[in-house]
Image 1: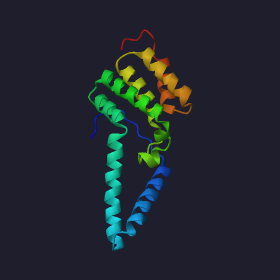
Image 2 (image 1 turned 90 degrees about the horizontal axis):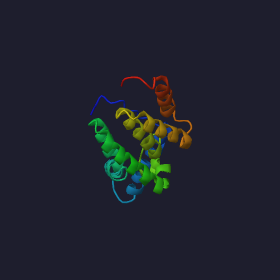
Image 3 (image 1 turned 135 degrees about the vertical axis):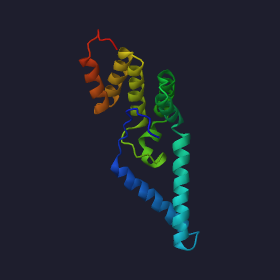
Amino acid sequence: MFSGKPVVYQVTWISLVIQLVVLQVIIFCLSFFVEPYSSAVNIGIILYLFLFLLVRCLVPRNHRKGMRFVKKEDYARAVEEFEKSYDFFTKYAWIDKYRYFVLLSHSSMCYKEMALVNIAYCYTQCGDGNRAREYYVETLRQFPDNEMAKSALRMLDSVSPYADW
């Protein structure tokens, strides 16, 4: 669903190879129990899709809620959800680190990084440039190569502090 919001989704192409390997392992395991092989392939694909949808809906649920609130322009509630997402992926860092396998994610950004950038974005949309700046700086402290945060800080710096938003 297109919302008109500037949503960026960066894909790590090696993750697609990992996903194909996961799918192949599922099919290989099923081939011992299901005859003919074509049935194992079909069941494997269905099982993979079910697993994909299940983990993507359950584990990063606060991130998904935050994105829904952004699309509805309810930035205060989006911040709450992104903060919960950040806390979850801080507590369970291994899930975020191995997201290609655990969450079947293709994103090049980890969920902690996405949460920080999204919180900062929400604060800019609320007109709170100072809080946005804090979160973009924190993003760069934890993830120094984040181009979105660098670009946003340059944009915030280019705007006069007396500009009428």
